[in-house]
Length: 499
Image (tube, rainbow, N blue to C red):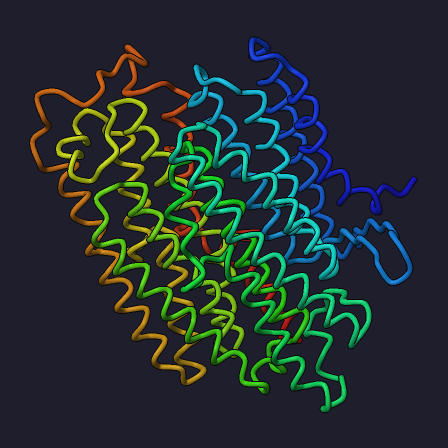
């Protein structure tokens, strides 16, 4: 029996079905909830590993469901979808372990982990979407699944942040839907196709294609936090640390950035988008967002808000890579999809550890925290240095390839953006590291640590950031190894440019 047509659907359901079962559990069902969470996460890793091997060897995985004539939900696997689904799957496992420890004494855990699983299912659906309409469906499911996570604490600030998030993302979803429907009425089915599918369309449609691109970019730019559509992201920092990690490294902002990549490369085609002048607009928006986010991060005393504005800046490297015509810049943008996720989830895990263990929420409260929590602070240091672009952490690989790609394409202004961004990254991260390692600690922390007698915090909180920090270093040191994110991004770029 050939199971290939069922594999994409099985990957989506491997977290969706446990999520539905978790909703049915009582709050006291800790072990059952943990078992379902871990079973779904581990099963998904096995299935995705199977898919990676198959895609590399030319297998075709595609699940289809016809809803009505002219409208099909399609889940399929290509090299680009595998890159994103692998990131989501690995980081979901780590985040699940972290969330179990972080929320051990929190109310409404079954509700939280139910929506948590649905959120990852929607993200995987976005990654495996085989056409634009399927992408739109899962994009909206992701919005609905993450709203309760942002509002989880139930405080006035959480309710406000969740409403702002919902208003932004639903508005973006409407624009994306309108653009997708308009485009489908012009050219028919919008299957994602390497090299794009619009280049052969009549020239009379080019004007409409330009307008539609801006609709799609606006709809995707909300979740990707492109300026000026980024306002929801700092507001959403009222969510628990595992949710913040999920929003920034795995799900929402990555879904928007991934969607931009899909539209540029597999709907329009990068060369056709360049001929229409669309890449220039995308590049300007990305560069503006990179600089703006970094400048705003400088003035934030709240640690999670500083990290949020850092995300606004850093995720736009993906769009910047997509805006430069040429395979080398494409490699830089695509590999940053993975590298930024690993580094940023490390930083948010560490921020959650400081808050949960010591009651430290602000940069100004971090004096001497490295002496009290050395392993957490070492992981934070690795993530921060990677964001600045210091080797051998993975962030250096991203900036190196973006710079090489810009030089090879003659887009030297991109190199200037990267240099300014790196200086600003250093300006808002290095003072944190100086405080953490070299300033004397206070006599009393805002919260007395009581979580562990042997370790600096609970094991389920400590090991996830240590592991992801190690992954960030390994991804940099072994960038040229087979099946590394860089090698996989190179494979994608070669196929997109037909080389």
